[in-house]
Length: 330
Image (cartoon, rainbow, N blue to C red; front, side, top):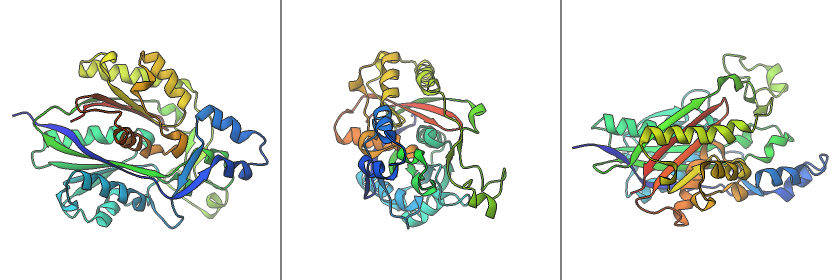
């Protein structure tokens, strides 16, 4: 009998501190019309921040708990936890192992995936591989989580984008097709454009680097918009070819939630109507590694995705990494 991986449930957590664009207009009063321009170009009107004493694992926990509860499972039922983030609790150990402890998933192995906002589709593909290749792996918890506002210097204009949040999905073994396949691409020449450049082996943290702000997230150089505008359609077409379906066969598609205009351009490029996608950045901000599972969960809650739909998830993260995966919704 063939063995497949399928999504059993999703979960989501949006923290409680609301930061509206009107709040940022006061913060960036020294930059006339800055917030208005950013809102017009991104669609973001609001974002939510976690308490300052929270770590990334604290933010991931309620999303993981909700996903398990909705699947009718207990933490002890989880065989593997895969967590994607680029705002980890620590450089090491992995945030997934901290989540495992806080969740009480005593039977689960864990590891992190660190390809920024491409982490969730990458993690889903990895989870599906573990399930299909290992008969003892029956339940995998996949989490995407983002707490980048704590790693942003006060007054950094890029702080306009960063919202905190977490999303999760439970994948289980099934005898019916669920996960269909994945595709990935990268452009490592852009690795110096955006990141946290002190604190690792390239430049261990020093008093000087901390004072200079190099242990905080920085955009050094703007990414060309064609990276997503051309890269997303390319990886979707690569995915469709790998999985043996045509673009019009896609029933629903979810992208990294950073600029609504980019999603509109790519949907037009693919020949898909906007009714086949969903956006959350307007009210939740850019939630990075968490935005795809959060948007997926919200679309499911709003009944935009139905059983039997062919779903595509497309992630794009700094570095840059891009990944897409396809699933049949149960």
